[in-house]
Image (cartoon, rainbow, N blue to C red; front, side, top):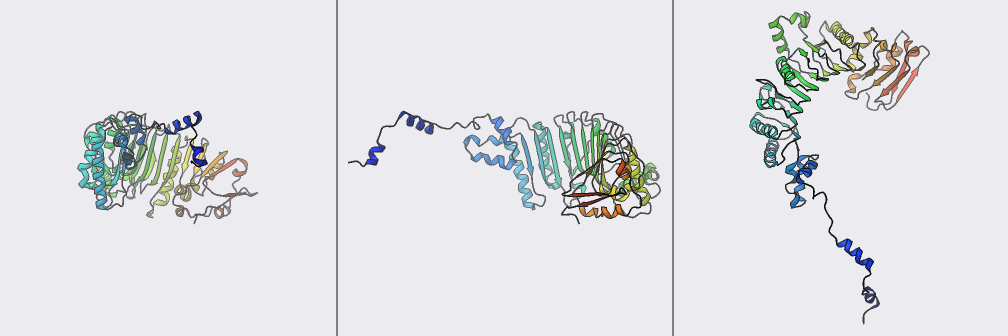
Length: 442
């Protein structure tokens, strides 16, 4: 005889239980896997290429999906061993052979380059251009190699109208013929020797270029950007090249003009009548910067620092350079000023600029001469290299004999950005004191 429990379980199922079982047994539809290969490849483009390749273990359907990825970006650690770099190069070679996408959005490689890999990189660039890549990034680390060992860009790259964004780092940019980058909107070149002729070729062959960024560069003293399309110029970290400057200046007779008889400084003159945004940051080396026609400029970031070698003329030359820059920017609405200008020389400048609306300061000294015309002042305190700005702002202001009455009668709002705590005391004599709770300040 059956037990009660077994009899109870043997009851015929109800219609409701039949429906529930049917729902549980019905296979789940994988809507993602059902998508076309091209769409799945586009989705995988948002993953690092190593992770995209790992999806091939999901199922047979996913075995080759990653090969349709429209973005291929290969990154290697700069401190990799020689074998690791060799394995990385081999990995890139094998990956691009398996790529099945009809068109690339982005192709980027970052690794410790050696001249023995020139043929491999040539293969990669041919692959990128053949796939119509819109963005190409060749970011190389030369380590201890000489500049002559750096990668020379192949001429086929200069006549490709598919590029919209280009970044070359530690590459030799030497176009032999005309440049044809008809679709290029952003160009970034770093760790390179760039002549004025090369720059003008690039500008002439890039009719829709909007952003030009040069970093860790040398080779020219004059930069003239006449293109109406270029709206933003970024110059970051000028490399010193005394031999190049001396040779050029001696040959053309401009040495006296550039060095003003001192023989220690070369010029960096910038002219860009259609430019809207200008940034000069990082190290300026020993160069003296001057601005020509920047009549359309709206935003200016003057946050560079100058390498001081204690030449006898530095005391006057550097303040005069800064004064000249600010005089050229009198029409600009938004200005960012760096710690070098603020700490060293800015308090000596007494000319008032009535058209300024916004001034950002990246350290603890103040444009007191501008306070008399500003109703709102935004103070931006950068967090890079705080040790370079060992400055007691409270002691500085209380040590001044002159009472800045403009703080009481003109300045209405002061906004501090980047401080964890700010305490402002405005005494009856119009002197402002400032305290900070920033923990990492020396």
